[in-house]
Image (cartoon, rainbow, N blue to C red; front, side):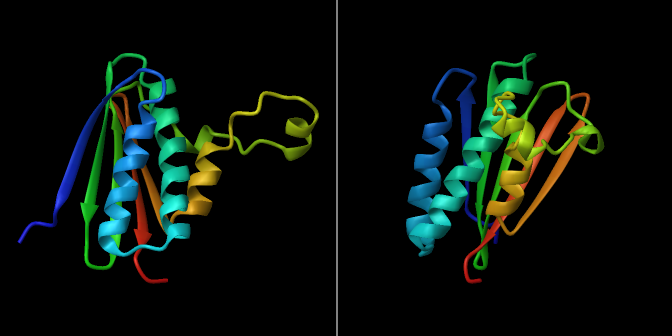
Length: 137
């Protein structure tokens, strides 16, 4: 049997990531996730959506798939942008950020810290971020 899947198609306009986080919260409640787990999922999802919105300039939509598994929630954030080379993404230096440098740039590191596993697949046709949050840790 296929795993239950919820699919969203979000237009690239301000605050649409909140629809994704609201959906994630409802799914988390259904799965019996803790409030802390749901909050971590929401924060990771916001970062992934904002990255997709910022870097998918060639498309008007971002797609989000929530796949419900007995053991975990799998979330895929899919854009149809130009892609990126993860090896060329630099981790920001904290001292520069504290000194007034642009505050963005922490998204990938934050996502890694908030979910149990994350994978980035990127080509010139777009990027898919797959995040997994385990039900019981």
